[in-house]
Image (tube, rainbow, N blue to C red; front, top):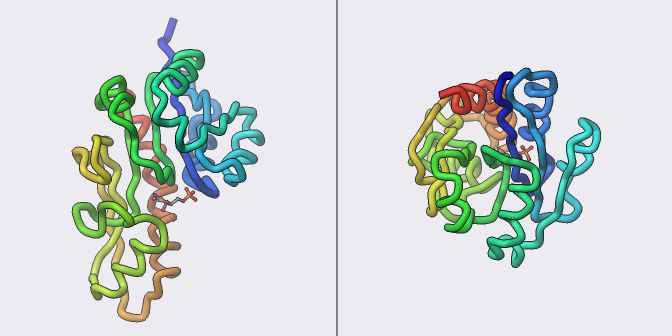
Length: 191
Ligand code: GRF
């Protein structure tokens, strides 16, 4: 019997990356998106999970600090990997320790550039414009106890033109994210 790997997606927002992952793994023989966890009760990702028949759970920020609550949920769903897709809370140490090299994040820039606390969503792309950077892109990396500092698994770059707005960049970067995040997760799980 082939061993199945169960993934929990953690997301705080609209969940377009989560949707790309759910689509990619919908009929996968070994990898299943088994659970979606969000810290935002109204997050768009909840409806996306529902559409795919994937259970979702809301966990309030304060409850994320409660190892008992989160660990019980993850073990109930037999979760092997955690994939962060636009998740805005810092991952607590107890989870980093329990899932060493089994938590993966995506960042919408070429780390170490434009990373760290406060560097998320539009802030990242606005900083890219302000710095007149010639290139930006995506970084898929393991998650450690600090924002955006775990070891890098994959990067893809995209040119920034002088005329690009933060929205133009966000659009280009999201396309890269959707194209590369699912197959990179597949590769990480199969390592
Ligand atoms: C993505 O750009 C991701 O890299 C970042 O937040 C954005 C989330 O978009 N961390 P979505 O919720 O997946 O649409």
